[in-house]
Image 1: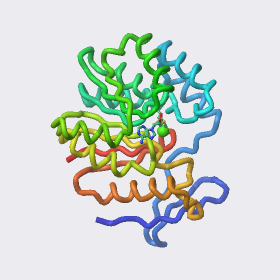
Image 2: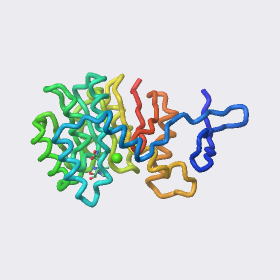
Image 3: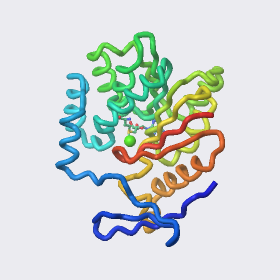
Image 4: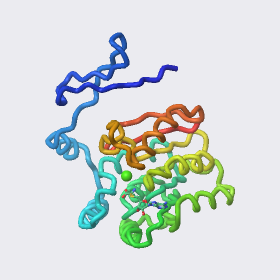
Length: 246
Ligand code: SAM
Ligand code: CA
């Protein structure tokens, strides 16, 4: 299989843009560039949120860490994936104020379950409040503590091959370790979603060598070459990596 060592030439974002390996082997960039106007149109034309989801976003927007929350179109996409998989058991690593968990839980059947992992007892209080308000709190089991420890516990409890879908959105330098644990916990055919793999574009900037950026680059590359999964990176929000366990 061929892997592309790409260089991107884009003359001030004008189309056409080419990603090339060499002169004979050019891939034209067909992803649309989102302007604010187009983004706003996309939301108006397609976003469906419940009133509690909107209220949670508005409440979170007032917090200093609000950039951590996934955008609503991503929540809608994750809900769609949950339904597409017919998922009953999901797991999330990185909850914050609970928007992604709420979006997943709303898409689960009534007897579905989402195990939600986070180390922060404060922001997750907000999450609990809104999950209750949305009437889905019985579908979410929040475990407070370092995620790697909780994942190890789940493995020790014998929860192998028992999750249909997993979402990774906590410490970027731990993604590889979350992934290894989740490969044990996901069922074959289960879906893993890793957030922020395009990291505001910093992953493509060679001068960016901070530990989060370096970790995200290494994580994405190692999943590409991992024979236990099939993957795809989608330029949705801050970049989503989807991986299905084979
Ligand atoms: N998915 C959330 C949403 O939709 O709003 C955003 C999650 S936020 C980007 C990351 C969260 O991961 C924070 O709430 C933080 O407390 C948590 N976190 C970071 N490192 C962690 C760790 N080692 N163990 C557990 N949680 C961790
Ligand atoms: Ca994120």
